[in-house]
Image (cartoon, rainbow, N blue to C red; front, side, top):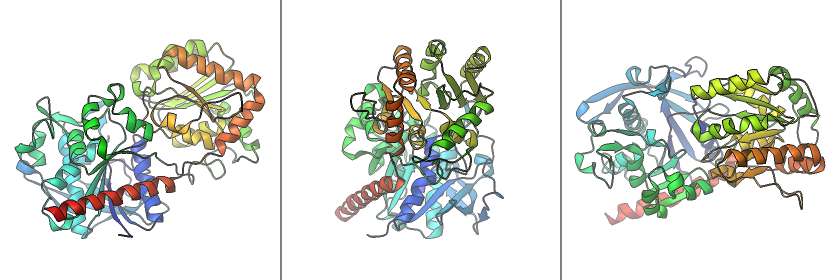
Length: 496
C-alpha cells in the first residue's frame, strides 16, 4: 500500500476554472500528493471558460457512455491535459448540452435548472472514465455537493463492480451552505433505485439533497480546517445538517488547506511591482506606491492601506462592513477593495468610493494580478467573514507581511494568532462577535498599532512572514486519512 491510486473529482480546478477556494485546493493538493509519490488523476468538467488552446487540451480516443438511470444513456467525450508545473493528468468531461455554457453553476446569480442532471452526469462520467482508463482508484476524493453523488454511486450502482472492489471514498466539505437541493426527479438521473429516497439517505422535504447522500455514504468526510470541522456540528454553522454531522462525527476530520508558495510568495511573485522578503522589505514600499497609483489614491507612505479581496456575499461579512464603513472612514486610512457579487454591495461600495475618492478605492470584478498587488501593497488585510471554512487570503497576507484583521471563525481562527501587546506575539488582529461594533473596534485597534506601536507592528509583520502553511503538510495528512479509509474498506469487503 505504498503508492496510492487517487482519483480527485472536482467541479472547478485552478487554473482552468474557478469560483472559490475549492478550485485552489483541487489545483494544488494533487501536485503535493504527486510529490509524495502517489498516482493522482484529476477530473473536472470542460466548461466554455476552459481554453482548449491555452492549456493544450488533447482529445482522449473514443467517446464516453454514461448511464443516466431512467433518462437513458448520455454520451460525452474526454479531453486531457496536465496541471501546470507538474505531470498530474487532468481529464475534462466534455458535453455540449451540460457544460457548453458561459457559467459554471449559474448565470447572473441564477442557478441552472438542470444542475442536478449536469453534476450527476459529471459524477457518473468520472466513474466511467476510470473504467475506460483502466485506472483502479484506491480512493475517490469527492468535493462538495457537485460530486457528492460519487460515494452514493460507489455503494450502490458500482458496489459489485470489480474495478471498484476495494475503492474507498472521501467527501471534502469546502462550504456546507451549498448542498445541492433538487426535486425528487433527480432520482431518475441517479438511477440507484427509489429505496434510497428516504430520510436516512437522500430525501429531504420530499426532494433530493445530494450533499446529504454524500455525507451518509462516504467512508470519511473532511472539513477544510479543524475549527470548521467543529463548527459544522453546531446550529450556528450547520445549515440544518448539525444533527446529521453529529451522528457521523466518528468519520469527520478537519485538514487545513495549504498554500501554493510557488505562486503566493513576494520573493518570487512576478505580478507585483517589486519582489521582497523578510530580510529586505524595501520592495513592499514600492508595491504600496504602485497600489495607490492603481486606485488613484494619494501616495502617502505613512498611511495604513487596508486591502480586501472578496466575493461580495453575505458569508464574507460584507453586511458588517457596510454598517461599519462610515466609522472606519473617519480614521486616517486608505482602503482598496477587489470583488464582485451581490448587486447592492457592488453599488454600495462604489458609492463609498465616490464619496471618499482619497480614502477608498474599488474594483468591481476579479483580476488575479490585482489580487497579488493588493496582498503585496497593503499593510493590513480585512476578512470579516460570518463563517469561513478555511480561507486562503489571510494565509497569503501573512506571507506578504500584510497583517490580517479577521473574525475568529473557521480557518481564520486556526491560522491567525491574535496580537498580544505584552510579549509582541501574534500575527494579526481578531474579533469574535459578528457585529459592526466589534469589526470597527478591531480595525481601530490595528490602525492604532500601525501609528502608535510601530515596533510592535514590525514584530507582528516579522512573525507573520515566518509562518508557513505548506501543502506538503496537508497532503501528508490526506494520505494518512486515505490509508485509514482503505483499511476500513478492505475490512468491510472481507466481511461481506
